[in-house]
Image (cartoon, rainbow, N blue to C red; front, side, top):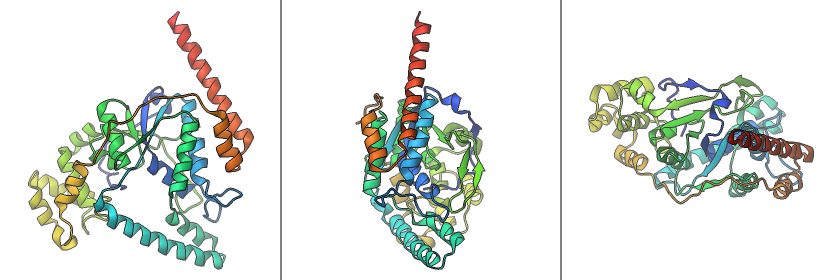
Length: 345
């Protein structure tokens, strides 16, 4: 969803080492789209293998995941299931944007306008079933658990954190908060920098932790009121929110009318902006997203042969790079085992 909550949340900067041995539930689709939109060639086009298959998402996934594993983080990858029916309009809107961006990208390509190509390229990103399947195979080959959400992945990660099975959810979006996620980690990267989408430039970032209870205390809101605020600003189920209402204006409305949600949406002139959508439907969708207990968190040994086949033989990764990463992970695991044995005696 990408809720516009940046200016409203209380954040705490983290060091990667603070998360060592912590179990982290990764919002996988968010992560893969992040790689797909930022790992691109100079002209903005996605990276591909010799067969023309997109590999941007796999390059990012392998590099980021193995680096975090080296630091002792225990990652769990959660994938989206069936989206709520109410999300159909969001997909239609995104498809339209991608179609328009693709046409503009091709036009810029024909005219040799590299800057324009780069500008529109990230907006054309599409993560198809085959790409998702490849990502899952790489994750399994690395010995990491995968959880299939019945619906929204971020709701499932939130549920796993609430249950105490995971320490935090990992995502760039703030959506996890409205699904009741106690702890959210953003900017989880070893490099300490993030590529700007649509530009050949980077910005410095530090991992940050956001705790739901701190956000609610700071804003003096209940979770239901935070959900109402999110709907006013815009969610995946009502993209763009109510025209003219940003985070500060929305917060003022919620503060003024408290739990009188009908009055809040009347004051916001909801029906004028969404004549065919009841705000209650959006609210109920967020509150009642299906989640599952049908998962096992088990970390296995890396399957070298499978990993080499997937990355080197199938997608033209550097064999030396893949082997080097695997060896580093083995060394790290052996050191950890020796330390554990030393402390036992």
